[in-house]
Amino acid sequence: MAAGIGAGASLAGQTPGVTAAGGFQPIASRPPPRHEIGAIAWLRRNFFDGWLTSLMTLAVLALAAWALPPLFGWSVWHATAVPDNALCREIHGTGACWGVVAEKGRLIVFGRYPFEEQWRPLVACGLLVGLLAASGLRTFWRPALALAWVAVFAAFFVLMRGGILGLTPVETARWGGLPLTLLLSAVSLVVAFPLAVLVALGRQSHLPAIRTICVLYVELIRGVPLISVLFMASFILPLFMPQGTTIDVLARVLIGMTLFTAAYLAEVIRGGLQALPKGQVEAAQALGMTYWQTQRKIVLPQALRLVVPAIVNTFIGAFKDTSLVTIVSLYDLTGAVQLALGDADWRKFFIEGQLFAAAIYFVACFAMSRYSRWLEQHLNTGTRRQ
Image (cartoon, rainbow, N blue to C red):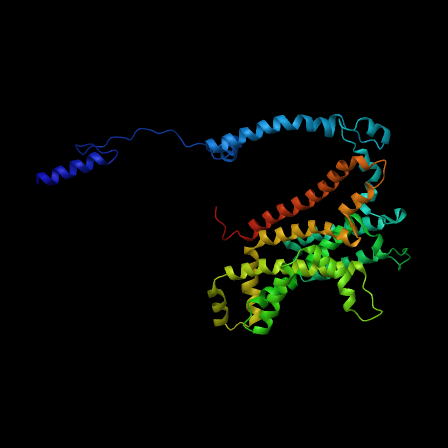
C-alpha cells in the first residue's frame, strides 16, 4: 500500500500541472508562437533562418552595396541611348552606349532579312509566341490544338519564305535573329516530344529489336555534342541523298536539333516511367485495358507529371542551344548580334549588344521556368507535400 502511494506521488511529481497531494496547479503561460505570415516572417524564413543564413545574407548585401553603385552609374546614370557614335566614343569606359541597340536593333532582332519586309517576321513571331502562350493554358488542351500548331507553322513558313499570296520570296539563308531562334526551338521541341515518348516506351519494350534500336539511338546521339550533330546534318547528310537531290540547310539543322533534343527528352520521360509503381500497370491490365490504353490513360499522365521540371529544363537548354547554328552559317539571335557588331564604328560596344541579346534569352528562359513551377503546382494538387 505504501509502495502504491509512493509510486502515485512520484507520478504526480513528474506530471506537469499535478501536485504531490493530487491537486491541480496551472502551467505557467508561455510566449505566443511567432507569426508565420507577413513580410517580417518571410524575411526571417528566407534570409535570416539561422546564423549561417544570416551571415550569407549580410555578405550578399555587402557585395551588392559594393557592386551596384558603379554598375548603376555605368548602365544608367552615365549611359546614353542616343545612336550617336561620336557621343558613345566620348563616354566609352564610363557609361554604356545603348545607342548601339537603337542603331542596330533591327539587324539584331531580324538578322539579314530584307528591311522593307521585316513586318513579315514580326507577324510570324507574334503568331508563334501567341500560340506558345495559349498552349500553356489547360483551357486550350484540346485535340484542336494540334491543328492550330500545324496552321501556325504553315503561316510562319509562308510569311518568312514568301513566293505566294503576293509576298516577295526570301531564301532561308537570309532568315536570322529572333524569328530563327523561335523557329528552331519551337519546331525541334514540338516534333521531338512525341518522338521522345515513343523512344522512352521503346526502351521499356519487351521486344528485343525495338528496345535495341531505341537504346542505340539514345546512346549514339547523347554520346556526341550538338555541334557534331549539326555538322553531320549539314555536311554529311547530303552525301547519303540521291545524286541531284538537295535539302535546304535549315531543314537539315531542324532534323539534327530534333533528333538531339528527342534523345535527351526520352531519357527524362523514361525516368518518369520507371518512377511509376508497377501496380498501376497491373491494375490496368486487370481491368482489361490494352497496352496503348494503359499508356495513354494511366501511365503517361502520371509519368509526365513527375518529370515536369526536368522536361522544362530540357526545353530551356534546347532554346539556348540554338545559338550553335552559327557554325553552319545560320545567324540566330546571337549570330545576328555578331553580324550587327561587325561594323567598325560600333564594334567596341559589343558588351551592350550582347547584354541586349542576353536580356531576351533571360526573359524567355525565366518565363519557361515560372511556367514550369506553376504547372508543377497545378498538376500536383493531390500529391504534393505542404
